[in-house]
Length: 303
Ligand SMILES: [Cu+2]
Image (cartoon, rainbow, N blue to C red; front, side):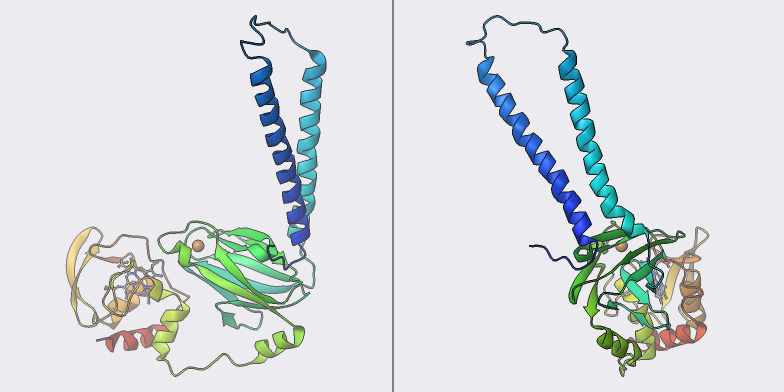
């Protein structure tokens, strides 16, 4: 049995069973009739081929019945889908952000989390945003999936009705590490939700620069150990001389704080030689100047 943990599950599952049922009925029926005809009208039993000219009754029957069946499928599909676009007024509104290759969720009080925590039996609306390419937020247990379009403002909502922890996947092929773009939603009681909301985010003794790199998923593209992932590694780059391509012209630069800041705010201005343009998007307005200073400080120490 698959898990179903939201009020949408019933409608989606019902329409799926109806469509699958009708399809299986016709698969079996048509196959059986075909096999019967192969024997009944083989050359041996039916040596002289006959030509049958039109049959109005048949024409009407095989037009009307399939039309009714398709309308039945449409009806159940529509009944399952319609409530997904009608958000209750009292829904908790959370901003869901996607980027290559990470989800993050921002709660009304400003709290940001990599995973969702929601109270049971309360409607939750997610406003869907993407910082770079097309992603899609898919929660199979809730039977809900919507595209996250850069520059668009799509949404989804759900009403979870079973406590537990469920997978969130990106369902739109969004590049090399698409299959690692995972998160989860934990459905808890109302009191657990309240205490989670008010609890201070776990403090770590991590370098603030490292925290910023993690929070913005920089490390999905930049390693700290010298290996090349999507972008160059951060290891030992500070003070290094590097070849970059600026407006199509190669030149040598020394990596300093100003260069790192520019790489973050306008990544395609100076392209590191050997890397493709447009992979890294600008973090202008996303990462503050203080955070950039923390990053620079952290990279300096990555020997
Ligand atoms: Cu994605």
